[in-house]
Amino acid sequence: MLQNKKILLGVTGGIAVYKACDLASKLTQQGAEVRVMMTPGATKFVSPLTFQALTRNPVYTDTFDEKDPNKIAHIDIADWADIAIIAPATANIISKIAFGIADDMLTTTLLATRADIYIAPAMNVHMYEHPAVIENMKKLVEWGYHFIEPGAGYLACGYVGKGRLEEPETIIKTICTHRQHANLLEGKKVLISAGPTREVIDPVRYFSNRSSGKMGFALAEAAAKFGAEVTLVAGPVELKTVHQSIKRIDVVTAEDMYQAMWEYFNEADIVIKAAAVADYRPKVVYNEKMKKQPGDLVIEMERTKDILQSLGENKSNQFIVGFAAETNTPLEYGKEKLRKKHLDAIVINNVVEEGAGFAVDTNIVTYFNKSEDEVAIPLATKDEIAEKILHFVDRDMKEGWK
Ligand code: PMT
Image (tube, rainbow, N blue to C red):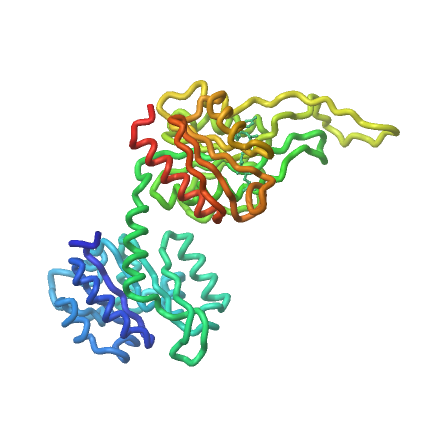
């Protein structure tokens, strides 16, 4: 996968620089063209000559050491690179990138490049857990940088904990897996709904359900990570989107969700309805707070529109995935929903099962498509389940589901 790839390897000052030598060597052996850039700190641990010999390319250490008058070296390398890997990445370089600081060859080049950037941190465990480092890493993830988490174990500083540069083989494997996934849904428009709806009774009360939006948001993040153009129609939830490219439409009621889904439906390639839409709403909505009365209260309810049903009945080329939240004989009811709502696939969860359904970070689901292929996905995080669902959708679309 890395054959003929142009890789910029940024090496910063930490004892783990010795592992970067191995990484440079392994990348070169895999057929990648590797150019190494070292910070002044890194050169205190290992000589640039070591990397030059391993990669058979010049090593860059100084922004002002312009060897070719026809080129500006840091811009030239920034444009040249397909991938940039920073290993080891110190707390210092992470913070500098997060603040747009460009005060040496490496930081200047990283600011100028459009390449995918992978950061493999290595530092003392307390530095890795410092709120400043955590905030800076979070910011970089939001900007689309990829992190290869450090391993836990004995650290050169004498501590035992998280902060050890991941092994070169694992760094390469993680990057290859990521790149395999990265383009899975490139060019596809994915429309996802998440969270509950709220059906208003009066200015202070509403009917709703326990959906937190976690499943739908995990799907939106995974689809964006796989290169799709994502529109997320979200009911009232506390969650934030991480991937900056996600277009988020906030709605409140089932009717709002119906309107928003229809607005984006025609241009969508894939539609996934993970939202828990209210089936009923109060027939009368009061403009003022209802006063307490003696005795019982009866609120007359009317059906909301079935959004998924209407999309399924009117679809052209969209691949439509519904969710089924069931509490007894889930597979039977779920499969019935697939047929009734004209879906291409349905994700069935038994919401009373431990670790599945509403509000938790995990789920247990069965993916069932209209060709009647059935795959059980056992307990896993909603992020992992989202990725698996999207892989099955991609598989089914490639197999010409129409
Ligand atoms: O949000 P979380 O806390 O992470 O919880 C996740 C979840 C349990 C909400 C999710 O995994 C899930 O199961 N979502 C579907 C919930 C649901 O409403 O299921 P249902 O069986 O009632 O509806 C079947 C399908 O029809 C769903 O895709 C639903 O979005 C859709 N529907 C239902 C009613 C309606 N009026 N319009 C709809 O589009």
